[in-house]
Amino acid sequence: MSTKKELTPRKKHGFLAEMGTNWQLYAMLILPIAYLLIFAYGPMLGVQIAFKDFKMGKGIWGSEWIGFDHFIRFFKSMQFPLVMKNTLILSFYNLLVSTPMALFLAVCVNYLTNQKYKKTVQMITYAPHFVSVIIMVAIMNQILATRTGVVNNMIAALGFERVEFLGNASYFRHLYVWSGVWQGAGWNSIIYISALAGIDPQVHEAAIVDGATKVRRIFSIDLPSILPTIVILMIMNVGNIMNVGMTKVFAMQNTLNKTYSEVIETYVYNVTFASGMPNYDYTTAIGLFNSVIGLALIVTVNAISRKLTESSLW
Amino acid sequence: MSKNKNALIADSLPDKIFNVFITIITFLFTVACAYPLIYVLSASFSDPMDIFAGRVWLLPVNPNLKGYETIFAYKDIWVGYGNSVFYTVFGTLINVFMTVLAAYPLSRKDLKYQKPIIMMFTFTMLFNAGMIPNYLLIRDLGILNTRWALLLPGAISVYNMIIVRTFFRSNIPDELLESARLDGCSDFTFLLKIVLPLSGAVIAVISLYYAVGHWNQYFNAVLYLTDKKIYPLQVFLRNILLQTSINDVSAGSVANETERTYLNELLKYSLIVVASAPLLAIYPFIQKYFVKGVMVGAVKG
Image 1 (cartoon, rainbow over the protein chains, first blue to last red):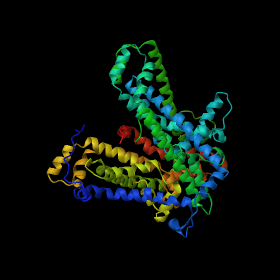
Image 2 (image 1 turned 135 degrees about the vertical axis):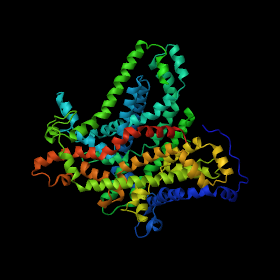
Image 3 (image 1 turned 90 degrees about the vertical axis):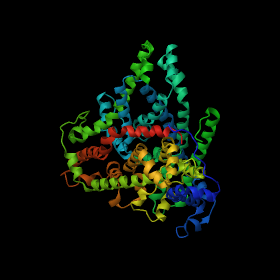
């Protein structure tokens, strides 16, 4: 790898001197920063309509401030408890299942001794990650269909009742989470597998000499060693709690399962675009509420983790 | 490396049980991953009557190409295919160009104001304005319902930018820059002539990430586009597979309703295959690059 020798410092250090010596580097940054200002920070200016009575004619800046009216309206609306509950349950369920599953798979794969088999397992379990959301949902609809789906055909062949996976709304959460495991567990295990491979083999050798079984080594060596990786990924996931895989929920959503599948972000879309007279200000407020909670969560979890485990995102 | 640590001493009984256990678990999970894909592939070549009757389990039954013939005759799918290729190619070009332009200066330790710039980037990973302000921006920029609406937003993924920056930091030795400077090489020339040729691996990785993202993306298209002529494939797929316009595809190719129901079922399978075939076909060959990307990304930026 590279030697860590410092670059020869370039003379003075004022703003002008910096621009003089490094102007080419800043020139490279013009386009990326312009992009960032327009497409990432531009919408953040637009967020102000969450506190305004937004009138198309007056524009974002000209509309009148009304304070927290939109937020209060949302909190008081009938939909609020429902979408809040759906968002949180779906997220936590997903969080509690997906990380352990990926970790579990990684540990199993890590101890496979036949290299050829190991490579095959990895290759095949990574594949669903590349299937698009739409295709994934379509596959799910096909194979789980009550009368014609192959899964129900199997269930019927074994002598059980066919299950209405798609028609019965209460299956929605399980379908969402476990289809995520199908699609993501393999891919998400990569990072754990590489962390496991980075553990000093001598530690394992010493444990083997001491007669530790593999299960023992998993709990005494492997998991403690990769804890920082697990923590970092957990923080990132917690920060995403409010961002349920919106595109997947949206693709899975239909009139039958809406009581379970309406999460904050799909609600924002549905409320805005289902009506001929969209209330952009109101739905912006809902979206902002969502983002702020997400930000607060990630900051909190990060702080806690820095205290407890000394691994944190920043 | 795991080989020698396991071969050191003959396995004890608990370890033997453990080996059997993990082999079974990984086998089951692998089958669970592969089976739906194999089933869909087989069903797409089968007789729809046999799909309905539940006679297709693993291999095609009464193989035929009826589904594919109908799909190949349906123009919208090819419009979508063409558009998706366009979005993927040009979108990825923009992505890679912008990402490198951001990552290189920010990888340079002698760039004085990099801290605030980096923070500007990373903050966007933590907080986002939400769907509606983004929508209003696209509308106010006048690119609603144009191809730009799918190419410009998301031009830089901060995550990928950090991957590239980390790669530059650890793979481009400072000595190289020093000696290039002595030869009077400018930063532009250095990036173009020295850094990029040395960074093929990471450029390949992020290109693949971006390309897969473009190919599979559908929601922005649903949000920003209303003109069918510029829909990417995924939106057509959504309309046909998840909504109800499957009848448009089968229209005219069958005589009666029952036959149409059968054909529609078959069409769905064939369509899934047609849509996901390109990616899954090249996947085994490029898999290692993706994995490499995850590893590079794991190094904290």
